[in-house]
Image (cartoon, rainbow, N blue to C red; front, side, top):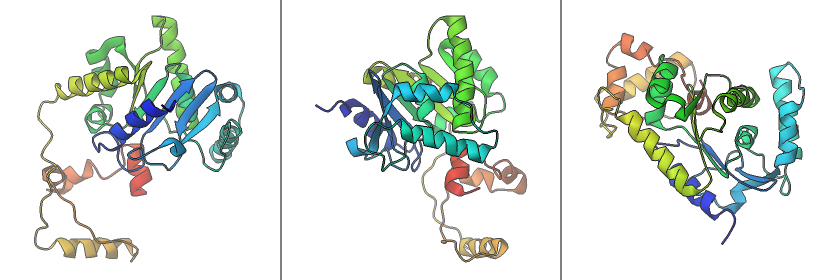
Length: 275
């Protein structure tokens, strides 16, 4: 049996469930000794196999934590990317996930980073930290929002060091504000159990159930609206599409409701909607 068998099963399980992963979002990793296998950038989790993972040296990844990079964000990201590539042990034809250093921070064998709809309902709340601490106390480590990539890695390391200093242990569950969650475990069973526990606990705190996501057929005039949006954006490079359900209807019933969702509030909105 392949050393990556369990992480492949975990990746496919969460990657094929839109409640946890949308599009190419999320990433997974597995550690053994000095080696860390992580999903390559751009590879979907839903049908990933061994070829979708890259093996990197943890010893070389550790150096990124102490390295001094450019203060210019664009240049810094290129420098970090170069160091990530140099840490690859074998195949350098693929690029490791930008969150590789984040995965390397935790010493658990399995690290699963997803963006669950249920959990992000909490993490995108203005009271996210307060409610998370009220529900989970020190069972969960909370990281306030910062840009994905190297900046998020450094921020998480800072919070992690403080958490270990106070509680004397690494957390198994990490909440990333406006972003998603990380679940760590020494075995696959722990990951399944922790993830299920978190989603069930958060769901139980909803005052109302989420409205149905069942598709609603277009109403008369929907194509006219789409055409007007094209005119407004002054572009022909849009594909006409219609998607509606009861949840969407809440936010398009008037301008005040729409204003609440008219700006991106998670990194996935920016990446996949090009906002």
